[in-house]
Length: 107
Image (cartoon, rainbow, N blue to C red; front, side, top):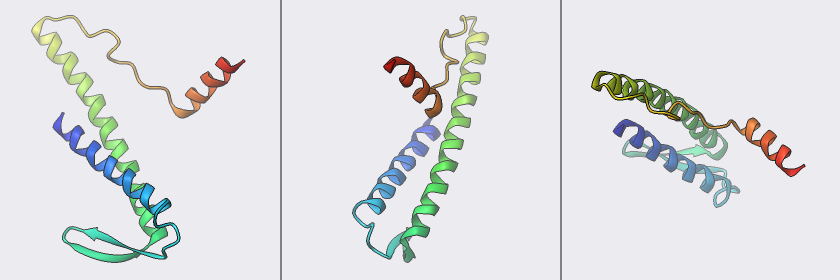
């Protein structure tokens, strides 16, 4: 559970960095990037690509952990003799599904 929180915090920091690169530093050619305790000048475009790839990896890890968490909670409830949680196995709509629903609602 704490691992999900830590990864989500990192994902939020990356989102803030991407937003800053797109808005505040969009006209800068090179930006300083922190790797551990060292700052290195990196091209703006490459930095954005690197952070975007990191975001995709973080999303995948978080989704995998959440899926595993559901199975663990169901197993724990089974061991304790509690009924399986209802509605717990729901998954959110994808962006395409959400767009389709919105189109239907606007008719």
